[in-house]
Image (cartoon, rainbow, N blue to C red):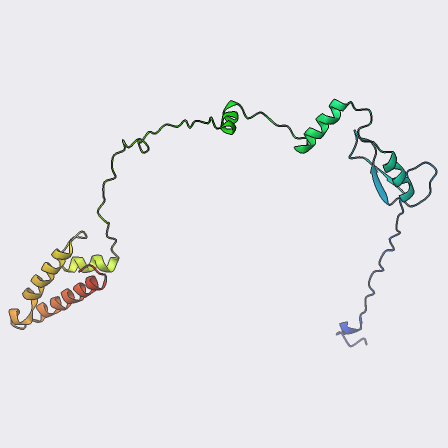
Length: 198
């Protein structure tokens, strides 16, 4: 083995840790002298409802039979507690006179009509001309026709007819420069026609 530097890791075995044994702790009944398992939780008193005693079943039954939540309270205190229980013992505030009028049907609306919408004094809305949104290709097509972006349909058609007559090969004696310009005009007009601008 002295000459063999390589060892196989397949032979190494690691034992898993033993699971710690958890001892189950048993609660013992809080009633004096009782050694039974405490499986039931009961409140200590009305003033300390968050604090509990752990009792066995027999002592929990006896505690519940003897328990009187309202012991030592007057009738007025009991009634107040029951009324507050409806809202979860949370504070409330009176809504005021305006809320009382709303319940009785005497509510009045008080708001200011600054724009005269409800009194009929408002200025009628002015109709706006629809704004035409153009793409970059459509703007370029208009520039080929030497027109502004706001050109009307009638202006586009007139300019197209004018440029076709000017650059047509029959009118220019077969000039190749005029023929290229005519192709650009026709292509620009077809772009505008496809966009619905003509």
